[in-house]
Image (tube, rainbow over all chains, first blue to last red; front, side, top):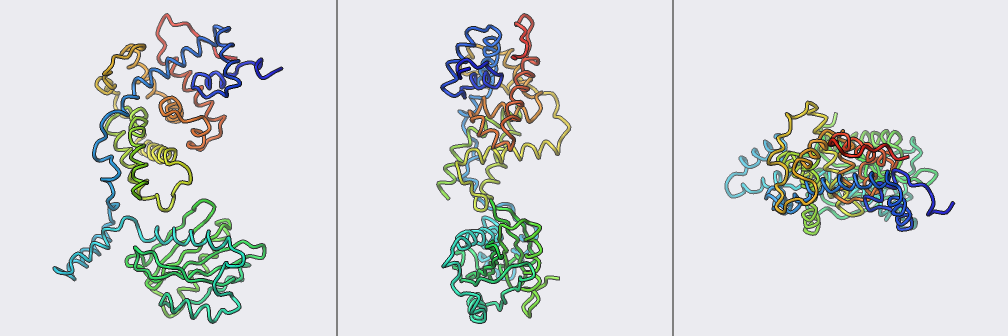
Length: 267
Length: 169
């Protein structure tokens, strides 16, 4: 049976009415519709439905758009939490007059710092975990130097967490530039690798005001990200391992990085 | 960022049209669109869509719509159709006002899933595959929602004297 003599299905008839039929079938369906009153009646009825819907609501798109729906005028921060407002108010009170506007930086952010940090961590993960020869700046063979260097540059003593219990060996690390909008300073990225080459990165920055105690788990495309922050640092663990595998890794990173003398208020 | 705003802005009229048809309520529809834009602005850095913005925005809007509906499951009072139907600036040639009012009422009686699917196709001109992806359902599910929506609309708007149709084999 050739393409043109196949019986017309309901889905095809709908596709015909909705203008979504492949050109090769359109002619065949058109002929069948002309020949078969039942098909023709259906097609006509569905077309009427389409027309009625378009007549009812189509004109809405030509109505003037109210100001509250104009994106350019809507670019204001999402409503800040009461805690943040209160914190900002305290800052304003404390600084007073001449320095009063400093508080604006806290309230007036466009988005939470953690979203910026998680995005940066995931981007860095995507770029460098795909590299073979240049995955890291300083390899694990020079771990002491790596740790000292990164600690100095992010101005926080950090150790490379030991994740061998999860089959993750340290590959090395690199220094990354800071996000210009944040006061977190530059970031350290530590890279780990499983025996079969799956990579996990740990992205660490200095602390960000208001973030201590924050926690977030998020899936971005293929990448899973676990974020947390304390009084000293922010940390994002990124990888494509299944969440149930990566979550204990993230917890281990947290425990090891917060266990030092610089641990904040984390319990 | 400015291009991103422009891109969203270009989608706003269609989002309003879709939301209006989805809810048949001017204020609720615009509230939905506003929530949708706010969420898009907040999320664009983390969830920047790879492809075009339009399906992504419709997806956000539909998620908001579904969540809201889950919250206020009790249905709103009967629809005041008068005044909500866009007063045809150019009188509709084919379907009369009565038929239009009937269609508006029938649409609102459809299950949300069916109405959402049908309007994506008929009103917004998404392709079947785009709509299936946007709704997160397989193609077969989309097609059966469309077929059921059309069948239900026919029954709900059935006027005496119209030829009765059996289902197409």
